[in-house]
Length: 280
Ligand SMILES: C[S@@+](CC[C@H](N)C(=O)[O-])C[C@H]1O[C@@H](n2cnc3c(N)ncnc32)[C@H](O)[C@@H]1O
Image 1 (cartoon, helix red, strand yellow):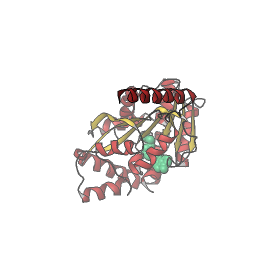
Image 2 (image 1 turned 45 degrees about the vertical axis):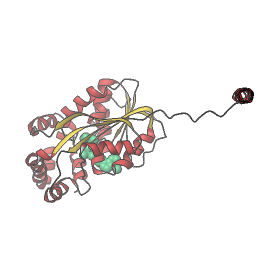
Image 3 (image 1 turned 45 degrees about the horizontal axis):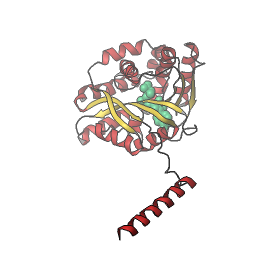
Image 4 (image 1 turned 30 degrees about the vertical axis):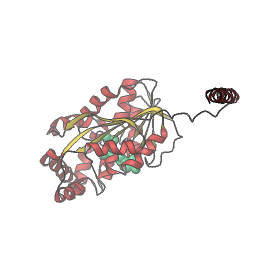
């Protein structure tokens, strides 16, 4: 079972740095309005999307590539009474099944860290309306990771795991075309595993059948402990923050000269000529 399959099997709700408390802090900063049309890219089991629908009343489409995640997220939306606001779909964020200029806001949490950042941000850019915003909670590298630690990180979270230093996250957004790029709510990785565990325990999608799952696959507990242990031991290398940007309004092409401009130019030319003739 790879890391994503493990998360999907568990139906884990906030599998990103800082857990659900970080999501809540970020939502304060993002200031989502009821009229915003939001895409949650790589939504997992839908905890953030359903919370957003309940607390802001906005319409959300949330996508994940893993069908098990999508199934659990749909169940969550139904049970929490927000199916009329949030719709879950199986889709790849590299190739989103939406038209250009579709959303006001794209949110993502711990997904681009595993993917080609510029490619995914270009896709976010495409589906955002002009002046639309992207807000992506991702792991940030605070110091160069020695090769043996990089190998351990990849063994825990998958071989594509690649957190970037802050300036490289911002470069990726800029390369995709975004403006006003900045990292909001930057934080160091804290040793707050207990806080996150307490939050996770409140998530019924995760807790449902957890004991049976652990009994069925005892190596699961060891695996989760190994991942948590790696982050705890090496937390000096890692932080996280909300990577933000805005899609600019396209500048209109220069206006073609019309009849009025043509007359103006002709008169100007005539005036300059007669003036320069007099001077001569
Ligand atoms: C670490 S989890 C984070 C899930 C959720 N955003 C959260 O914070 O709980 C990463 C998620 O991204 C999904 N994912 C990975 N690659 C994807 C892709 N190319 N397109 C859409 N989802 C993807 C995985 O299935 C997984 O649910």
